[in-house]
Image (cartoon, rainbow, N blue to C red):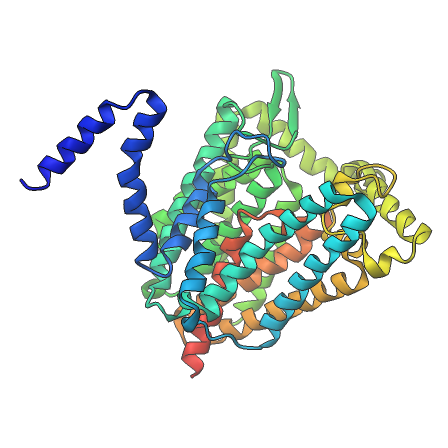
Length: 462
């Protein structure tokens, strides 16, 4: 009864506001205060909010950057603040993976100086912004593995199930969005599929481009495959949940039109077969992957037969004409890769200093804006030999740490370790045809899984 009076007074004050904006601000203030209290009341709450926002919210319709600012960035800023408030809870370790991450991120930051010198302040500002976006994933790794997040008693399996549900909702929306061609979010990559019935924007869901969606779907298809290898009592998800999720992620993967993501999935499954050799019958876990992909293909053919036909034709031609029409099959990438070679041979010092991280697509340092679509070549040109060497060292350290976690006696550490090890093997393949480090909205998910595996394996070893 006592609360009714102030609530009524606040509602009356809100109604008396002179315009709709003021009334909306007044009405949302209590909710924002409640959200702020919740974020500060737990070390990992900001991470939950960040992931939910990154996967389920579109960018804001503001002309800033490629896609406009994203609401998830506000939660990332809160997370950084919480890290400062809980400074005493950090227990950093100088293991090879932590060192490799720190060195690589430092080299990305250092390359901004080259961007400033060669391309000017505007391009350098963009380079710095994209470096900091990658830094969100790095921060999440340290926060969860060695920071305040490591000290919290978090049920990793419960977190994975929650993440699976949120991801399935995002992938389902991507399928519906492609079929009905809803208005695009504030910014999107101009990627289209031409059919007799019209021109369709490739499935991207709420992400900036279709390749991000494809990569995201592979991540959870690998999770499904790894889960299928576990004994019944150790599985995080039931068979119906695995099959439904498999169908949704497979459908979204097909609608993304990404062949590189399929190659990444194949590489990840080969890695899983290696990791589970002699432990689990291959046919039993491979069956659920095949059923999931078949269900996705069936959904595509039933819902959109014209698209299913052209997608199948594209895959067949990619295999048949790869050697004879390599550049066409690679969507003109050989031309871009040749341009990088010409840039480095004409300016060999660029191979040492780099031209600045993520500057080639936005500057004329190569004579024209250049989208390389190859992570290794991109880093060589933009961060120099030191940058690409540090990146290769990072991948070695990451896979070694994931493999060690996969061998842990802690069941959850082993699950997360196998998951990220197999998926990252696929990432190494897909990086040959895409700049995957720019996928800042999904990269934190991958580093969360890595950090969870590391944290639990370290705890089990102590």
